[in-house]
Image 1 (cartoon, rainbow, N blue to C red):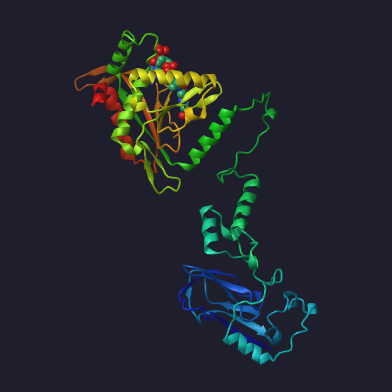
Image 2: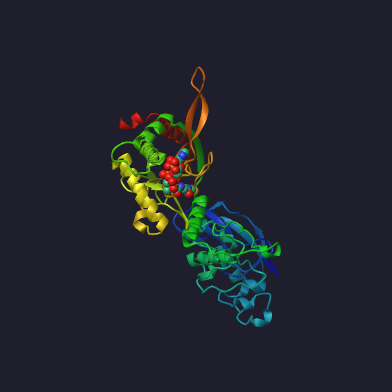
Length: 435
Ligand code: CAO
C-alpha cells in the first residue's frame, strides 16, 4: 500500500517570499526522510528544506527562482507503508534499495507517521546521512557568500560535485581546490584560455634551445597579464615637428649642450607632460577593485629601453621639474644604467605614463601595450618628410607618428583622440609649452 504525501514549506519564522536557489530533486528520485530537497535563499541566509517524508518523488512544483512561503507546496512523494513507518534516524542503508541492511526499527503506527509527515515537516535534527548512491539526488549546495566567491572567480558552482562541509555543503576551500584542479589539469593557461599546444620542432629540422633571460620572462608575464586584463585601444596621430627639429638641431651649437645627445624624445616628454596636465585622467590609475580613479599630482615618466637582455622601463622622477637638458641628462643616465643591467628596483617604480620610442629604429606605427597600472602609453615611430597640404599647395613637412594606447575602462575614445591632438599641437609649436 502507498500514500501520496505533500512536502510543504514548514514554519520558517517571519520570513516569506523566499527565493528557491536550488532544487535538488526531480520526479523519480528516491529520497530519504530529512534529506535536503530544496535550498532557499533570503537576503541574509540560506535555508535547507529537508524532506518530511521518504519515498519516490512524484511531482516537483517549484523551480529555481520561484518564491515560496510557509505552506507552499514543494513536491509530492509516493511513500509505501514501510517508508512511512521508518524512523528518522534510520541509516541510509536501510532504504528500499537494501532492505537486508536493516528495517528492524519499523515498529510505530503507520498512519500516525504518515500524518506527522504531512502536517509538520521538521528540519533535519539528526546528523547528515549520505544518500543511497545512484538513486538519491546528491547535488551539493553552498551559502550565498560562497556562491558569490565562486562567481567572482568565474567558477560554475554546479561543477563542484561534493563539498567538504556539512551535508556536502560547498565551502570556500572547495571552490579554491576546484580552481587549482582545473588549472593544474593541463590544457588551460593562467587566464582560463586554452594553452598553445607543445610542438616538437626538431621533427621539422635542426633547432637550438636558448633560455629566456629573467627580464624577458618577467616582461612576458607582465605583458600577458595586461593583455588579458585591460581593454586597450590605440589611437594614431601625427605631429608636424619641422620647426621643433630645426630648433633641436640648433641646440647642439648652444653653450652647455656640447657632447649631449639631444634627441626628439626630450621634446616629446615635454609635450606629453603638458598634455597630462591638460587631461589629468591620463595621469591616473584605476584602483584594484576598479571603483575609483586615483589621480596623481606628480609627474614621473617611464621610458622603455631596449637592452641586450630585454625591455626595461626606468622612470624619470619629477620629469615636470626638469628642463630639456635635465631630461636629456636623466635619460642618458637611466638608459646607460639599463644597458649595463645596473638599474635598481626604485629606478623602475612610480611611473605615471610610459613612452616607447622606436623612432631611432624605424617603422611608421605600432600598438604599444599599456604599462599597467598606468592608463596609457605613448608610442613614437620614426619621423618622415611628407607632403602636407597647407591650403594652397603641398609642403614638405617632417611628420612624427604618434600611437597612444589607452585603457578603455578609464579613457574614452574622444579623450584619447584629444590627447593625441594635444601632444601634436605642443610638438607642432613648442612655444605652447611655455604657456
Ligand atoms: N624620428 C626620427 N629620428 C629619431 C626619432 C624619431 N622619432 N627618435 C630618435 N631619432 C633619432 C635620434 O635623433 C638619433 O639620431 P642621431 O643618431 O642622428 O643622433 C637616432 O634616432 C637614435 O636615437 P636613440 O634611439 O639612440 O635615442 P632616443 O632618445 O630616441 O631613444 C631610447 C632612447 C632609450 C628610448 C632608445 O634608445 C630605445 O631603447 N628605444 C627602444 C624602445 C623599445 O624597445 N620600445 C619597445 C617597447 S614595446 O612596447
